[in-house]
Image 1: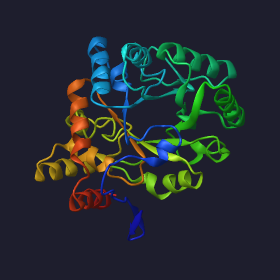
Image 2: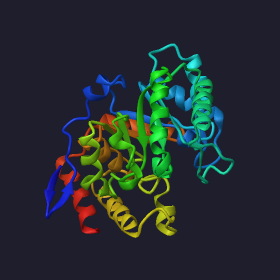
Image 3: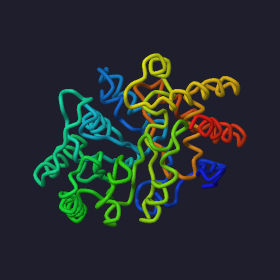
Length: 321
């Protein structure tokens, strides 16, 4: 990271390439992962046939890393169906425990009991048709009660010792949300969510250095900031959801103009910016259908943003702080 006027600024990669750090931990080389929240129905009803076809399409297009969760609707079941019929290389698969399925997918419910964690993982493995997952995340660890965190860490370590999960991670959180967890040394990966993307650099000052001090790798989830920089841009600009701050809307509007200036879609600008962040070891993109997947893969194939465009994105973020 470089600094300007005392504020951390992202570092630009000159190529997307592969990640030997990920490969060394048995998590594959690709810096691209497909998150299955949208395909599973987290953001609304889905056509499961189209979702399954999109997962197959991803495998055929060379996607080798998939991220699911029990709270992502039918995501695990669909990925399991696809893997049962797939004869190519086995992809890297991650899922999560802690947050549990609920009829209202937008309402978060958690179960951190020993029985709840184990039953959740067993259900996930059954749905995926796998004996173990490559990476098991504690989902939204900030909601793990502080007093229960040592026990939860030990239970996750036990799953690893039993061969049910090869690596452990934290999905989301920052600050006190990681206390008693990150410094335990149990976790190989931390997934940043709405902490480091084109409209928010908050994760640079404390999150990234803290994760690196623990020797953990970093996934960047939702590079389109939950749709603000993609298909839901106009909707969110018209009526700001509670989880998007005013400055982020301002930045998104300016980035839309910047993208048009350079002949890009806003989503392409955002994807290529995230893919080019040296602070991220892997970027988790989302898709709700094959067209969105193909667009994300095209952005990855296009390579990093030119240095000046990358710098312009950083200036937009700084100008609306």
